[in-house]
Length: 543
Image: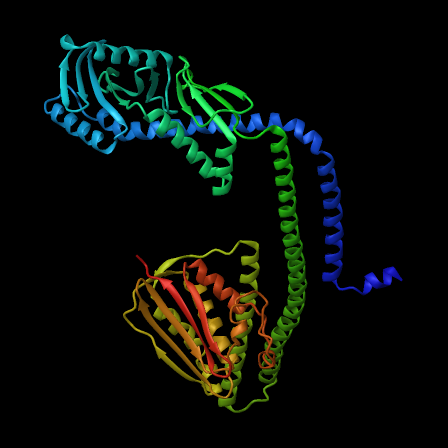
């Protein structure tokens, strides 16, 4: 009995039941296991907290290096292109140093030293004003600068991966240096650098980097929560505090030294107004929230799976209908070809005009059959990803006129009023002539097949900005608004009884859309039931 009930359910209901059982039962077990593991989670929170803090310190170190490197590139990199020993260099250096001081208030002093051999020769300094000092007049401050640079160079405390910029943190301040090289000799010709003001390291470099990391990786609420929970203190090798967010209430949980170029800095991290038990409970609640979020995603996945399965079922039905329609479409012209060729072969037609009509019918049905086969073959190439186009600069007007000439017999016999407004001075477009002819042919063929009593077809070409516009309009049965977005899907045919009076494969407009998009163009449709349709193609003009 149970099997009979299941057998009678639709595919969608079966999938819904299976997915529900497969999701909710494991989820309930998982939630229970998470609840039982709360004690273990509390014990592991300390290690997880330390791991997260270590990752945060790594990000902080990277952010501080990027911040310093950005300042160095902007302020020191231009100095590398100035030949300090050349005539007129002093004026250029003074101008650049003044600009740096104006645009970077965090810089206390900017300077450059030139070398002769391995000995310093001249110093260019800008603090409140620009000063040029010869080596013989160096003061203790300039000598200290040389010592700090040599210490940073020996320590290899580079900021960047290209090993161009050096950083040094000293009791008298923080420095960034750029060694200058003589490109002709490949030797060091000096160095340039900046000295940051007293509050830069703590208030800007460290605090700004921490805020940027928190705001980048967390929401506003999470950022506020993190800043109010964690206490961070950063000090140098002389125990001088560079930055402190707050005091740790229960002592520091982690002490860690930074890597180069901040090797003499140490970070101490603890909790401000909390303890690990509270963090463990918060972690459990976040895990439960994440579980609910996963459940939501799973439910969405179930809905999408059911929808996709249903769509595949409808696609399979569409393919079956396609085979039936194509078989009918192929059989009709083949029957006509066989009939009229047999009549002509048996010599039953004595009237020459009727013979010519029969020959025209045979030719028309041959072209129609060839067109259907081309559509099917092109569709199979597109599906297999093997469709190729041969783009050349061509006159679209000639392509349209050539296609219209193949329909002249059909439109004349059907009583169609064909109106064209095709400009002869159209710019060239980059197209595959055969593919575009096929696209235009499919649109004209649809206009002819789906026209009712009013047999009217109009084709208009013009330029719209940097595109060529091709409009193909008819006064046929039209397309309902709800189905206009679907007509370009493969195998899709409008669910209208009038449409199904005319057999078709459902591939024509799908091929048209693929061809137009392969030409970097767009196609759109405007239609109203019983009033006709207008298809508009936009193709980019050849440059």
